[in-house]
Length: 110
Image (cartoon, rainbow, N blue to C red; front, side, top):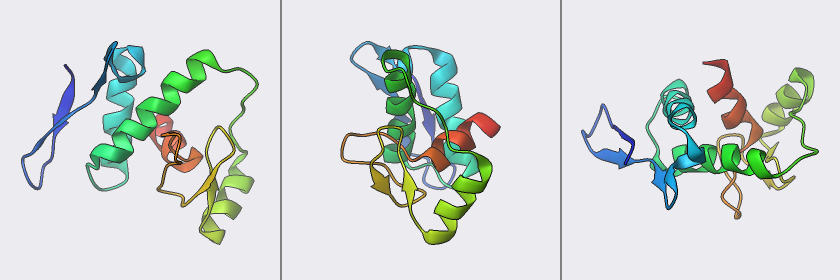
């Protein structure tokens, strides 16, 4: 089982799914943890949503991240898309468990 520990509460947060670490690899788990730290908090649900998105990328084709101008416009409007085109808050995730592009790209930037 993989996970991380909250620096504020000390609570352990597991980041794994039925097949092992979320997203299938330790590298994906590490990206998820970096994204959570990048956004200022260790939110187990956000970490899980980012990991779900990475797993989704492995089995779905035809997706592309938004360009920087589009992402900035979405965030300015207080809304963001997920890879499956659901609309959520920039720091949110959809009912299908996928993180917003803002969270996903934050994990990649780190």
